[in-house]
Image 1 (cartoon, rainbow, N blue to C red):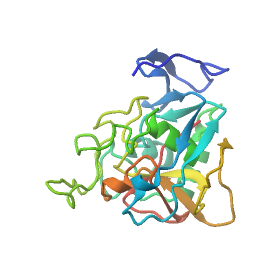
Image 2: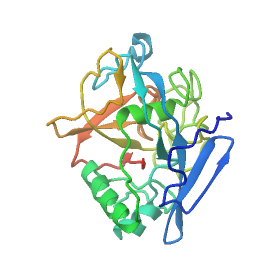
Image 3: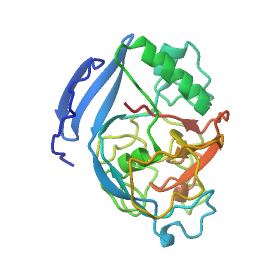
Image 4: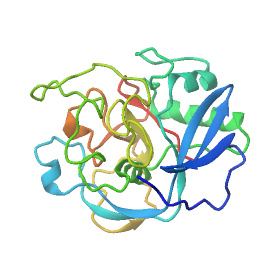
Length: 263
């Protein structure tokens, strides 16, 4: 899907080691000790977040997916993949993951662990202000202009998404994470937004995001629950939809949760 180039105000940022444009739009890379992480420019825009009632019917959901308009007034850079074990090790000098592989997602990392990683990474690269995406930013990027349950359409296969299809007739379950960039990217060049690992978002958990139009939302509250999006290798298809949302305590770390960088 070709994307019209609309460069951010300051391009390239000081922390970028290389940059360019391709069929997906503007990209740049962050480099650390020879390890490269590519980012995609996600332009400002609006979309309908959440899902119609008929889409989520039949699923036991931890929170509501009430559909509402979201306006994102500012563009942002989003990593094309979740943080790999290779990048995590370069920053943190350890590897908590249960499924070993340098190009597999780092997992068994809590929201608090992710914040520690971000502080160390930002200290290592002058000018960088990496963070977690907000829940709205994450879903906007996952949908990549789509309005269907998945960015790929109404249905998915295990050739597109690493999810637990074993409970569905003729399905497959890989029973673990797979390497980043193993499966097709969405229309904006982002890999494994559905499945593989749940991804931490910056937001505090809200049971219902409401039905009113909002601009640049980010839920902040005193609750220690944090949002995860995207589903994982453990989940069946209904839980890896673009609108799917769940929550865990900020201290929780499990083998189905990782995170993706935003700037």
